[in-house]
Length: 122
Image 1: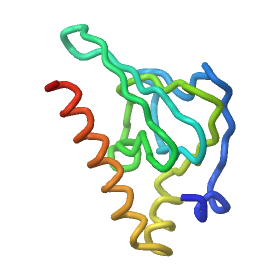
Image 2 (image 1 turned 90 degrees about the vertical axis):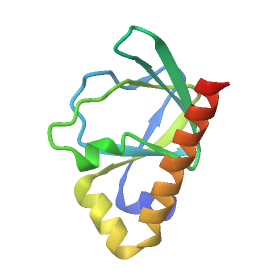
Image 3 (image 1 turned 90 degrees about the horizontal axis):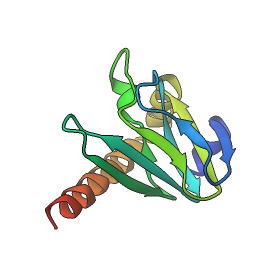
Image 4 (image 1 turned 180 degrees about the vertical axis):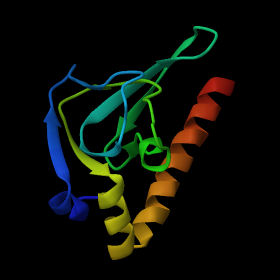
């Protein structure tokens, strides 16, 4: 992701800063270069949950594949952090330039889903 940072928008956030809120329209995903981000949400039953996203992982990837995407949760800087923001056009460019980027993205998303399943079962 650091190599892609030169081709993408890099943003700095302070602890507590809101990156996006639930139900905001979304047209880009984010990669965490430094620090961590808390994703929090409520499900249909009103139960709350959260996940910490650390450096090297991505979040918000649904915005790249769904037209009219709305954010499902709120992203807030858990610590001071630097994020890459990548829209669909930049994502497709990155995949063409470095096809392994797509595999690494899928691995990141898969690892996060596994962690959430383990946490919710345990």
